[in-house]
Image 1 (cartoon, rainbow, N blue to C red):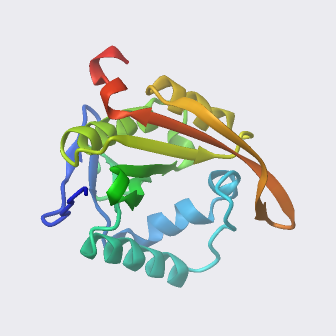
Image 2 (image 1 turned 90 degrees about the vertical axis):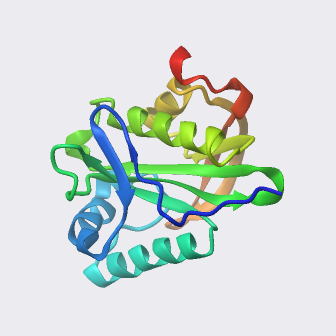
Length: 190
């Protein structure tokens, strides 16, 4: 079975980014992210309506760290490391199967700059080489074309398509499942 320990917190960095632990001081930026209708459009959750919701969510994220059940990084630019511009995480760890689900969000003013792809590649490198995951999956609504393109550009392959398997906001929606096996991940090849 997969053994993970997120203490001390693994801070990651790329050419432009710092992926760091979320903290209480991130609450306003996190609320900005999770209350943005465009960001939340394809997430399957309603936008946040209060700072308290954001604060509670950050606490929940950090509780997952304590139990080694999942990890979420604050995404920040190196020149402004204290300012959260997004999040990325490996959660729903299925330790007996060496598998995790990846999730990511980014404020709209940073879209289409390659930031999410850069963060995904760094997190995958950590997941496969440090955590020793065997596979990582991404679950998205097929309507989220941008997310599908990012997953495919980082080596993920669509493996499943579930029709009307998710009920949200009064209607059933489809889910596309993308997956990447560790032995197929090559940071240099992408």
